[in-house]
Image 1 (cartoon, rainbow, N blue to C red):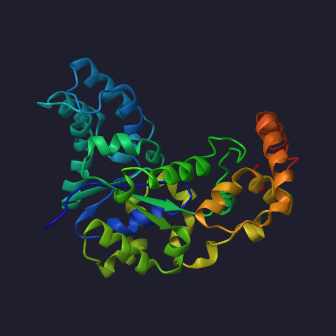
Image 2: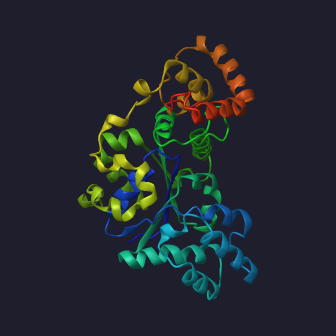
Image 3: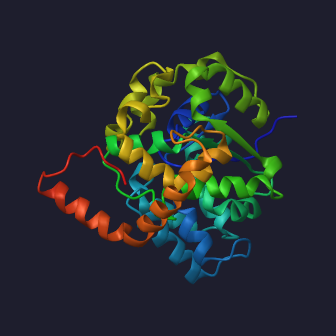
Amino acid sequence: MTDDSPFFIVGCGRSGTTLLRLVLSGHSRIEIPPETWFLLPLVERLPLTDELTPAQVEEAIELITGDYRWPDMQIAAADFARQARGLAEPRITTLMGLIYGDHLRREGKPRFGDKTPPYIGILPQIAILYPDARFIHVIRDGRDVAASFIDVHFHGGVWDREFEWRRAVSLGLEYRASALAERILEVRYEEMVQDLEATTRRVCAFLGEAFEPGMLAFQESIRRKVPARELVVHRSLDRPVAPHAVALWRSRLSVPELFLMESCIRAELLALGYEPRFRGRGWDPAMRVTRAMLSAVGPQVRRVIQGLRRRDLLRRQVYI
């Protein structure tokens, strides 16, 4: 029996989610549009399953077409608004269906996926919206994620509870013990770049799809599938997939940076099976103190670092 149920690729940015999106979009039955993000405000402000009032439809239209990512969908805002207002039973899913459906028609494919990493924070809501949906959680070593953040000049701090990687993996660990567990497949970035075909076959099996060798020729679709404004942060996709990006932190991060970082995310690294640079219980007291100090002074440290950067007094390769 053919399975056309939707699926969502989630996790932390810079973890390989775009690579997986391009590979799966190469399947003859699957289309995955650029990152939507619209579900985040929609599920926060609107009823999940009830029919929307005319006022709520207008609010949804504004939330969707007012997002700076809307042009990535390549749908005229006026056309979307007209179709949304004409829905017989407007709901969050039927509104999103206009977007997913447009991409499916363009590509002539029957099954849609979504690759929006922060949707890992709303998996329970998505599971209500799409009762048959499946989820693929892409996981990468947090130290390599931070090194990658440095490359593309993303800002933040590992001391922060909202550090994107820490939040994503913490949620993922919670989902392992939830009713959603059987609907989630964890995919490691390290395994994906070491054996892309094996990982793709495993994902296809999870989705109930046959593996197609053409999926591995994803470079051919980069310029067409990745929004132009994002190409600058996805330059590595042009290169052959290889394990050179695994354990980048060993050469890219200084020992002090690693100590500060592992003080904050050591528990998550261990829970996921990543080996810390600073091993052994002897480090625990110093790391607890460091973590507490960073949590207390983190915002001030961030402001100082940003000021030094603006004055070219600090090298950019630092992520605290």
